[in-house]
Amino acid sequence: MSISAADVMKLRKATGAGMMDCKNALTETNGDFEAAVQIIREKGKAIANKRADREASEGVALGKVNGNKAGILVFNCETDFVAKNEGFIDLTGKMLDTALASDAKNLDEVKALKMDDNRTIEEHVTEQTGIIGEKLELSYFKTITAESVVAYIHPGNKLATIAGFNKANVDEQMGKDVAMQIAAMSPIAVDKEDVPADVVEKELEIAKEKYRQEGKPENMLDKIAQGALNKFFNESTLLNQAFVKDNKQTIKQYLKSADKDLTVTDFSRYALSE
Image (cartoon, rainbow, N blue to C red; front, side, top):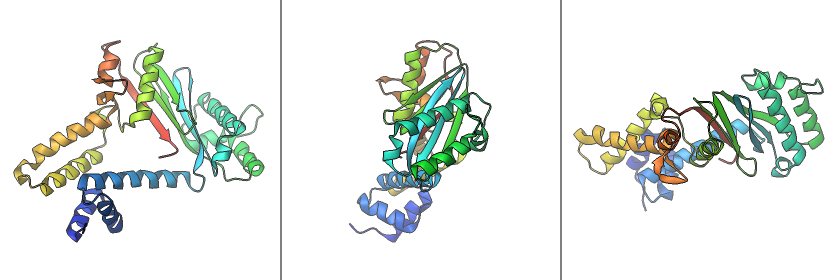
């Protein structure tokens, strides 16, 4: 079908994407505005991940717990062959153990930490680069400290999540369920109040433009868009998402079934393949 310049401009205004990206997305979806927006979003995620990985796009993402601290460390390489090597995975785990045992707050601090042989993590990375013959780099490090913490590594070591709770001694299965929920559903925030204001504004603009194109009255757009925003919150914030193992209840309801005051305080998710 023919895609008009007006349609391209509307998608560009809603997403901020380039003209050709918008045209290609509309062409791919046969002019379906909402589907085209989703394509633009997915492409944006892929580009962001590619830049974070630089040339080393393969690797492992591991999550671990040390006391009341949980962390994710991502170690990148160039090929999947290296990423699957047990020695490479083991080194990543040891580096994460070292990082969790310290007060390191960012990658630069992690790289400066000394391991058991009194050499820094950065020195180990440099050494392995020479041995393996590939570009290697640490690209992501995040920790959470809470009353209870949990970590999950998806089979294949390409996706890891961590989560923190406001109560001690959270049931092990419940903690794992929440960590797996984060892995499966990729929430952007704990609750609706935690969604950045610019994201909320963008979602409202996308919704209003969508319903404007459908011919809805201009004076009704704000109200209709608010309904779309509430749907976005339910789909994109952890506590309001439907529990993947029982979609009759939300994660918030699942947690309250164990303790009416139990909630998630923070989480992190990293996926190499997205």
